[in-house]
Image (cartoon, rainbow, N blue to C red; front, side, top):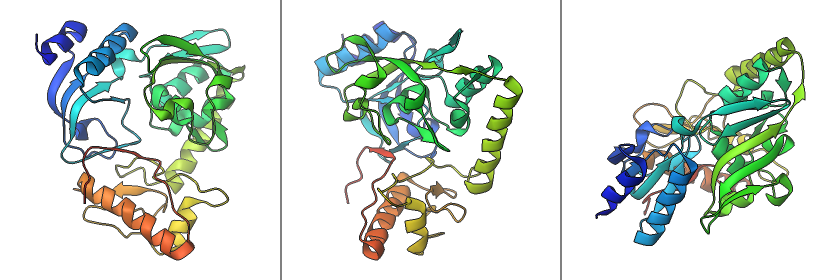
Amino acid sequence: MDFLSEVKNIVGDCVLTDEKMDKHTTFKVGGPAKYLAAPTLAVQVQKITALCKDKGMPYYVVGNGSNLLVSDSGFEGMIILIGQGMSDIRVNGNEITAQAGALLPKLSMRAAEAGLGGLEFAAGIPGSVGGACVMNAGAYGGELKDVLTRVRALTPDGELRDFKPEELELGYRHSIFINGGYVVLEAAFGLKPGNPDGINARIGELAAKRREKQPLEYPSAGSTFKRPEGFFAGKLIEEAGLKGMGIGGACVSEKHAGFVINKGGASARDIYDTIRLVINEVEAKHGIILEPEVRIIGDFCD
């Protein structure tokens, strides 16, 4: 039995070949993945990753694609898409549990409907729960580590395991999951009862700030660079005179210098080269090397 047939035995028809990744990233760029599977059960994820390891097939796990740049040549392997088919959200008292494919805005709104506060900061983050756990996503003074109570993940050895927050080494855009080999499947959050009107008002207040300060009208991956210790990436980039600068259809946002945007018709290479331009110019101007927050996969060889 060939590889594709074996994958179909696991996920049925939820597998595609030569699937363009511009459909699955918020940059709206990216060439074809050789295979893309969309599992709906944890056991399917477990079996697909085991199959890929057994066959020597490279694989990469994707959620909403909000922190991802895929090359124009695509990915010569298996993309495991944990999305709508694994997006269940359950409320139990003051705890809310969400599968990895649930989107953070939907999770935040579900918590608000239940009169639970603590996830207001997440309402404008376009990522999924899985990716948010990997990166310890945060905004406006809040981080996932503030509310996480448990994370269920597939370990590099292929075992399903529940992790306590103190085991995850959660820090700024960091967790043990970022080292690779893990697949987040579900997370639970401990929240505090509150007035739904007040919670929704806070969500609305943060949404207004985002619209005012961020280039939400353009495809992007949100903040493109990690914050260097003691500095703000956007300020360093602006001071280097890079607002509006870029390559091809990509540029540094005029609205917020921390965002590299697809201003129209950008290729993945344009975005990659713009990121490199920013890194080089900021180093030359400030002596500080910016680190991309965006994950980059595929071939970008010079």
